[in-house]
Image (cartoon, rainbow, N blue to C red; front, side, top):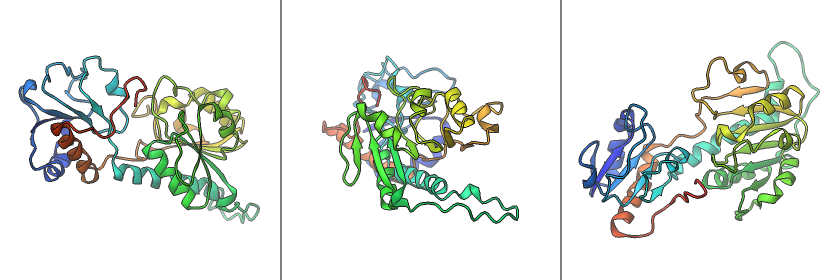
Length: 306
């Protein structure tokens, strides 16, 4: 099978050896006649120059395999008619669980309360994890991994998704229950994708539903939070702290008010990264399925956007 590696140039060196090792029967190329490729391995930013890739010449392609978990920058391409599959990487899920549990524990234990300034602050004892309510918005692959990790630490975890699809050991509530879920979220972890239904989901009205002083950890998409509403909620003490890893504009501009706000911790989109070593076997499996006409893994529903 002939596969086009349609990703920015800096992806090639870390990805190519792992992809070839996972799928030795593949002929992996960075260029060639579009009509000669059986599949594409794709990441936004290809081709260079800012223009969107025209998928129409790839008349033989049976699969467009995204290297990203988020596909909002791909599904909007009207030239894409081939099956599109998002990346579900075990390493990415592990990384997201590490990030979210780390920041959740920091909030839960009040680690930032103990300034190293000679003052003996013996006035606050955190509850046990089993007495702390944590809510995970978005119960896809990443959300389920995070919810499971947090529950394993003893937190009282509630998941929320539009469908309410159950997950073992976790109470998962569906769309209309969002106000109820937010009302219990002492720590709120947001892992929702960017869709028309999730943009500005956390607006002023919904932020007001949180327990006063709640912590928000957003590692989903920057469009989920109304930025002005978040700053207002922080200034009023309704939200105690926000850890933000994703933003509407990335890199986050130096002049953006998030950088200077004492209630916000900015991390530079590092919560979870697709790792070539763990993701390449997933790509290989989908390539083989495409070639034999078998059902593909993690096919994107373009109407839903994920």
